[in-house]
Image (cartoon, rainbow, N blue to C red; front, side):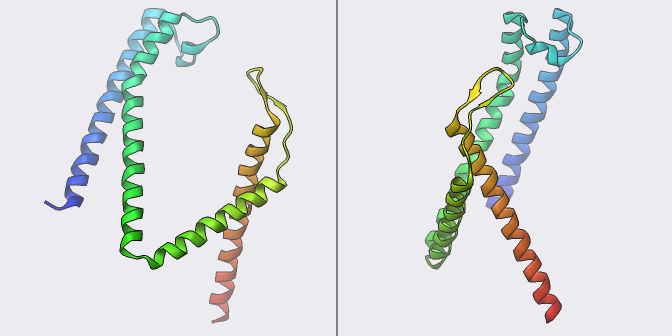
Length: 164
């Protein structure tokens, strides 16, 4: 049996398990809402709510959460194996990969230089530290720089096609 067929069956099984867990969770939430006299799901976590209610609601969500974590870990493992096996088969691609990683790190360092760190109050009353604020800014600037580079390269590509 081909690996693609096996993977198709695995994906189908995980999808079926996820659908069953979602169905069971939804039905149990309806019963839980009736039991505690709640009309909207957002009231599960309202301030001053019952700890018993919160524990029961959490126990309903846990199986779906565990399945999600298993799927994400599996996807990351398969992706890393595919990347490393591809690099092992084509050592010339290692140079291009290293160039891409270094270029990304340079853009991230530029984003870090442009970012400012300022303490900021959060909605829950906590305070975001200056360091945390700077890292958030770094992520935003890095995204903006990469988006600008991508748009610029698409624009250049379009101009080259028009010239030809």
